Image 1 (tube, rainbow, N blue to C red):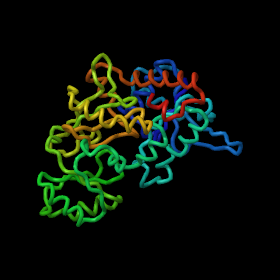
Image 2: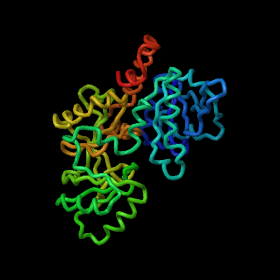
Image 3: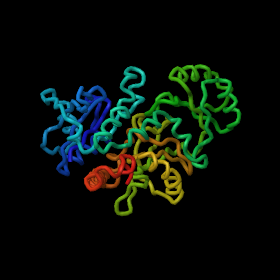
Image 4: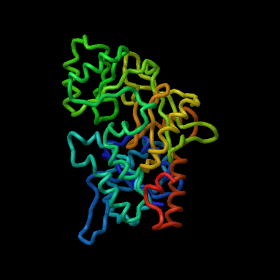
Length: 348
């Protein structure tokens, strides 16, 4: 199986990334791995779609640091590959990282992902589903029972009214964004720096305000879903608690958050089951839910991270399970080359 990973940039990849873990797991299982960035697609005059990709050496790396070094080797040649020769295109680029400096690149995954699908390539997550999930507005399509009270607006007057209605405070963040950037807690309208916070966040577009959940002080729980169901092996779920650093509001790992083992409760499983139908309908193969209590703070469909953390916590390489499921999907595609669409196969 040849699997191509679309990432924002090769130089930006890191040893602790889930994409790295997935690529290493694929290589360990004997598959060909290559990396593609938003500027690497070529649609030729004969309507054939190619990618200019780099492929790490066939030597299987045991250390993630060595693997990342191998894909950044300047001596590594660029290969031009017909997408028809790729079995799986794994879209792992984060549109929010490119929204400011490279807006042309933000939607490339969905755009060219559709073309890859038309040429028979299994593309996950499904590009049509990802096109509908370009920002946090996608979250509002899920049942209200599992969402915190939410306001989306660019009006400071609307936000002030919303803050007045939530005595435990409000979380304010950009509608488009990831990694915990520009996330603030507003306790009341009496805060002297509210206007400055509003100006900082609203500069990125629409804002999303959510009623604060006090249980978030203990961090949130990242739970992976694969094919719409909690990813697990031998009764151990692919889940962990993201614990915020002392004095830090955000629990994001790139904001000094730490990973801790967690027991997945029936309440958490009920939340996952509530979102399953839509995730399956949208072809969302691999998703990360951020859960506090019985509410979801975010649904990560582009680059959910944390699989390496769970390898360290539980000694289970869930990345290998993900690749094994892609192998199964390729076998299904071979049996049903035209009968099943990409969205069906993505979550089958």
